[in-house]
Length: 238
Image (cartoon, rainbow, N blue to C red; front, side, top):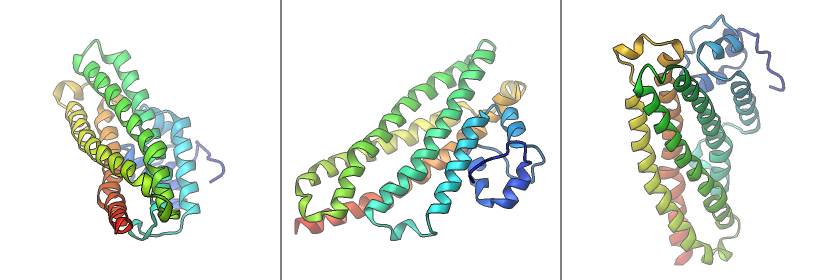
């Protein structure tokens, strides 16, 4: 998808590129037949249309470049590339959308309900933590894993750093899950919130969609990437 007509009805877009539904589901947007355009849907859900359009183009580009293959069959280097190009990219865009949404709601509705300000404060702290986590993966761990994958005989010095990084990231994964569960609980719609404007009512759905993406990334790292790395490391030490 080189260009995206933001006035095209989403229902038509999904018939042409059904894989795009996943992007909208992760943003908490229902993917039934939708007569409204991308611009109209983004406006109704308090999302930035330019950011969502970039997510769609990026997602289409990744889908076109990569053949269908299960992550269990990927090499360490391919797994790192997959996590960065798919999960990191979508997570950063999702965080940006949620940042805009929570800021907008806090500015317009925070005075009416202190819980809105609490949601904004909680999200800001979470966003800082998760972005720092992604930087450790992309700048510290993944380069070492690619080195281990391509030159295992030259990676003995890197093994200690790899293991320490994985232990740290696994601890942070548990913290991320707990922090995001707390954010989801804060955004549960109750009677007072249900009477607020549409962006507030959509907030919980957007958070839940982002949570699915985070959980998928954590699963691939905890259950596939890290165990395989440890197995390769043990074999290298033998």
